[in-house]
Length: 327
Image (cartoon, rainbow, N blue to C red; front, side):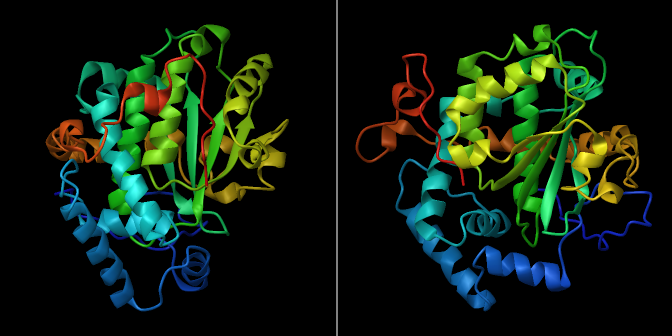
């Protein structure tokens, strides 16, 4: 079982000291999100959908049966309560754990390799929500002169945070907004991100998790930003390309993300990004035993009805990205 979910008061711009707990939507915002996600008004209907999914899982000899109700609700919300879409996501969720073990093993933030990444890269989801009910995730390096961190371990940490959010987004959010601070990015850092790794990571995030990417904002831009964006864009659908915004000033960012909900380094009132990152380090540490248990929770391709899913089918072996379907 995952650690107990903790509740938190609603976001307030006067609250300068955050706890790690994710603020959950309430009131009119919650009602608006439920409408956007097509959530049934009657909780019994959600329980019925969960029962349908559990019955389906019970008939899949190759899939684990350990998905708890909290995570299934998050999958339902992320798939706008399409049961067929949830089935596809769950199959991929467990399939990727078998296909890309390097992302889903040794998930312990106390390990030196992972601890060092959290020292040099800050990647916290912010506690508050945008007016439209989206969760904001920050990503920045701390020093341009550092040695490039282990890319696989960095991607692993991102997916670990995703797993925590599956359990702790108790009400559901309208989507995710990513803010990427490129102030310390260098060509040397970028060179470590091979097409194969990026491909595997994008498929994990977009096809195995109930993610709804709303916007990507890049701040503190440098010449390397164009290289990075141009590297990724060809592998995304047009509607996702249109959601990438490159800002020449912080004031421009504030048009999309309220200033007050940002960390203090970006003019906001959410406390320092370093402190938020440390709170997430502690939260990930609480899940260490759960992450270890989850290493055995993966698809067994030898039991899959029909043909097993191969690396060629999942990732392609010709060195090219297949077009991703991203909601």
